[in-house]
Length: 282
Figure 1 (cartoon, helix red, strand yellow):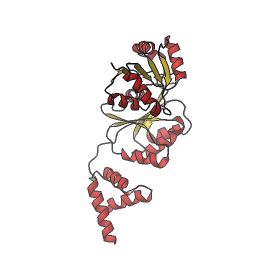
Figure 2: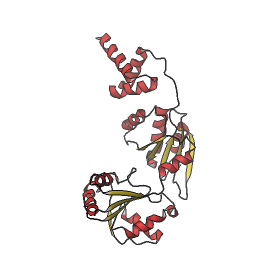
Figure 3: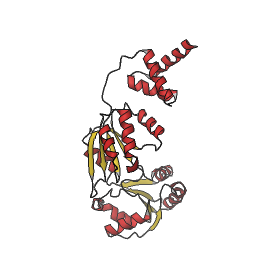
Figure 4: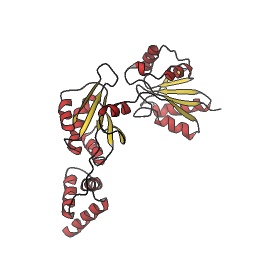
């Protein structure tokens, strides 16, 4: 018989938030794959449990190479427990490759539910929670970051991001530029830890606050785009907006898509306007 892969949520701050089953799984697994074995050791000590199985590292640097090894363990009947540093494996953490490989081999995958920074921040933000989307980490390079934000500029659902503290001010400033300075947001810092803080306000105001320096684990929640009807924008204005974006470095395809979202018109309408303008200029 094949084994079973168990994804276990770990505390995002307060160790007493650990689900009761986590200690049982840590004690009984044949293999414990941990993002950081040193942090795992501190967690097991806090929970008063000693893993009986083999402990191996499973992090971004060795995830691709170690996945086949763990799949073979599973195929041989082992119970493999996967834990990351905080929260659920596979959600902006190692795990997706292993889950996909196990599913491909028809190996059972289950989970020990646990704390989630995404849902905790969303609930504390004070922003709409009925519909939301998780965007993970934004690109580090400024141009790529702006491009990614422009892709979701018209997104109506609440947006949730992870961010490193030293990039928070730049990210919030970019969000204020793309989404609008007055778009509401919440910066959730050190959730469930001693210095937990939730700072709420317009993006421009939060960017100014973050410029003074922020520490800790950061989750950013941003209000979705407001509902609005189509603008009264003629073809010449559509072409002008595309040209402005192209001059700023955007590729034409991306510029057309962004202008279509801004104006509330189909992409085809913007594309046709650009093509017509090019032909008339020739």
